[in-house]
Image (cartoon, rainbow, N blue to C red):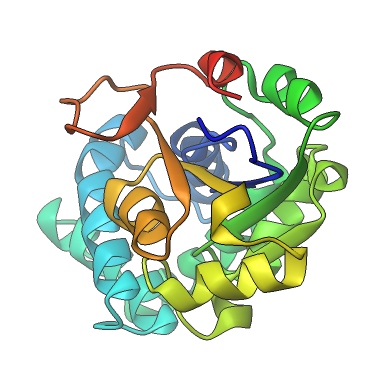
Length: 228
């Protein structure tokens, strides 16, 4: 890794913040709140790939924030053949975003790597998540103070992998591509997005999916120490 690196930009969901774990806990709470008798395990098995597909559409500006929030739930219930009204789906969508950031599980080694890096680099966040929700996640999980710049797609007006969001984050941080690195779990949004505007990138790959030639990757956050 370039010895001139001074700024490290992290993705949040699926990189530092354990999205799937916290999401499951949020659904557990809102199902109880709304008296839904539904197997959480069966629901999540259907919901998680649908959610991933809709986030891809959202990154590509093919669905709005409102469509994402509503349609991922509606399609999940339809697949499970659960009859549920639009009114209840809309309430579940609102309740989910209320409860989601109240859970604060981070990935293993998150605090360890942040404490290691904070003395050597300026740390920042670039996230496609909803601004108000992401701010609550950072605050409730106790990591907000580690970051100097928190750049959301809602603030930037574009989503990763659009180069503009990376350039805007670097501008606000006083960084340039040559002294910056992006760490994230999503190859398209985080890694290729950063590389496209001249930044270095590290793919956080805890699922140990197939390596991509020429892309630096780590299977645990603590491995970042060997690169920075």
